[in-house]
Length: 205
Length: 81
Image 1 (tube, chains in turn red, orange):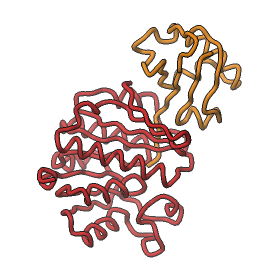
Image 2 (tube, rainbow over the protein chains, first blue to last red; image 1 turned 90 degrees about the horizontal axis):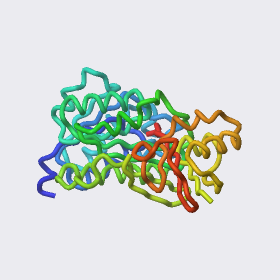
Image 3 (cartoon, chains in turn red, green; image 1 turned 30 degrees about the vertical axis):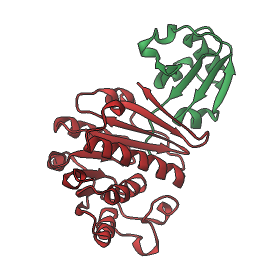
Image 4 (cartoon, each protein chain N blue to C red; image 1 turned 180 degrees about the vertical axis):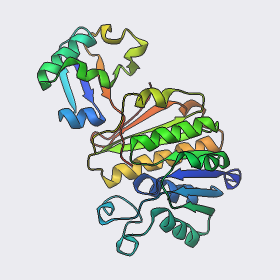
């Protein structure tokens, strides 16, 4: 816990996965969270995104979470209300770990590229339906690039709140492991979470 | 029998979670699945394929032999967040 208070996590995407990751990293004691999201809450987010409610509709997601974290007073927060671009490399520079909580393949690839350029680990997380996947990727690994090599985008499918919560929690868990030097045996492996079959498996790609 | 499990996009696309089939190689399995789902065998090249949790790129790719009881998993990257 003591070491975590000195750490900074960069969370890109503050919707479904990001909501759980932010909440859990703040409560576990990470010292600083940098939030990035250009999107606003809409009614269709209400089925799975923690902070999507009547009073936040139309408000920027990163700003809403900054306010929430201010109410909790467990960590310091920095908020960026735009979608990630190549110009955000300095945010990666200042972070100890990056968490990929976005909803499109192009931004995921940009996160992988900037993390590698800044020699930082990132925790990838994605969901489809009742399934999800998580990877703790080190800068020297090509596992993410290989896995997403031939993918431009994927089929969009309804996601369930419990899938979002589970995948987000595993991401938060791996982020804390990375921040505390305990990520070793989990690095560059794919965690498959299948809630239709209630099945979790860690595999090497 | 070979146990075939679909995850992610593969499951959504083919609307199947698990099948039990006879096949002696991954190539033959892809051909059987292609016929079953009325798609081309090359459709299966887009997925990460594991045999008993080992990626076929660490085995003999589509020439990887299968024996009774093997579990073949078809994975694909997800996108939602």
